[in-house]
View 1 (cartoon, rainbow, N blue to C red):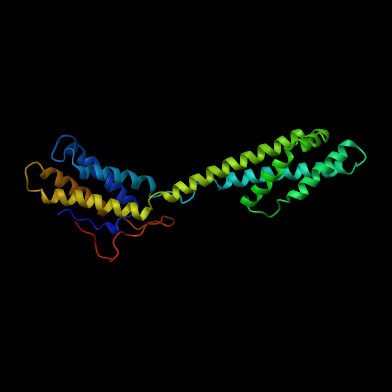
View 2 (cartoon, one colour; view 1 turned 180 degrees about the vertical axis):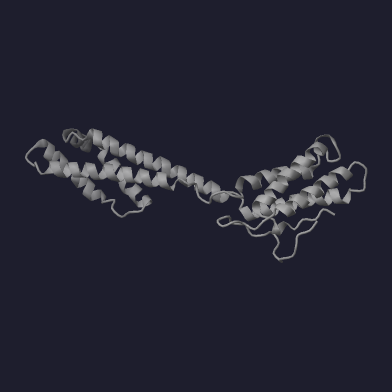
Length: 246
């Protein structure tokens, strides 16, 4: 019988055993004893899923770009506010009066210091909506800070775009099948193939396939190893600690 103690195979050895098994049975699937067998279809699909997610990241890896985009918009926000504070000191000039009016909008909207990304987004969106009003557009033009304001809007837009991308990517990753779930599914798909070939090994046309798969299993046992430092293993599919045979 083709016996495998799946729970003792490392992640990589299991993946390699699955890949090699598909290579060995492919000719029989194409035009031999396993021709168009649905169990092979299941193994191919399950193996593809396992290979794709077994060493996947839980998060998208976009955390640093999001943080950088936040730093950029914070810097532009601070710089614009400081420019207006400097001009507001000239309160007898049109630019100074316009700057003072714009600072009132900043103060009424609230500061962004110490806020979460979500709360800062609310403040920034409210500020931009206020500054887009006709009266404040006149003040921005009078204070000659339209270019700086455009930079602020661009920085906020860039942050929202990369933040949304991160949210979508993280959500998609969390919805993927877990590594342990993929491992259990692959165990079952391999077990079904090995059980079928074992049951048919004395029937003409199946002998070579049986012996080839038996050699693969021997190689897997020999190459199996404990995970090296830093390589995590998903939980074994078996919950009772017993070897998973046949």
